[in-house]
Length: 229
Image (cartoon, rainbow, N blue to C red; front, side):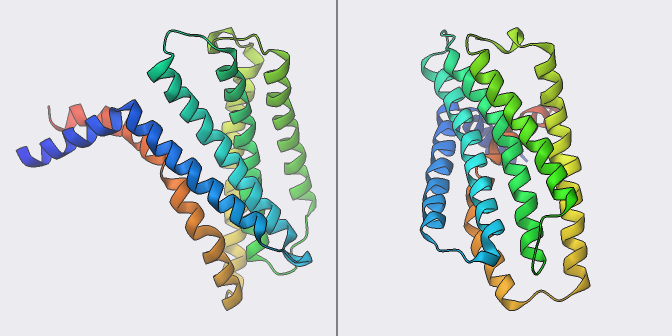
């Protein structure tokens, strides 16, 4: 039991290190950039354009969020006493990237699961909401560029942030996942589509899961004291 506790303590110490976490995000950014460049080099057909551009949107949105975390950790390590406008600016761009990523991911899932995929009224409605959300965060980032701290934000911005979390994670993604699973349940997935799914998602999820260690580390910090107290 003592050995297990020592192992958890070492993992705890490692995940608590800002330098290690920054290296983790830099590795994730590098891998995603490599995947993004590889995707740009691939040719796309007319029938796969939506999936192609959706994958690019997912990667770009995820990259912006990773760079925001990397900037935050860099500031914590080297510029902890400085309040720089750029960090708040990029944090707002990261909120815009959240909507871009989940909107693109929902379209990517549905376009790969359905033959002859076309944008429906529901897709256009969600895209309209996503566009408004992205425009809000990007516009706020430029208009309120002098903002230095989160406490200086307008109350409306906090409301839009909460709305973005609920909209992206629950309304948008749950509806897309349900419809995707339903479409796959209705028919057997073609072999060529299985290859496309494997090609498009395998490398991406390796890069996407790296920063999630950071979020799980927060849960681990919370439970570690309770487990061994």
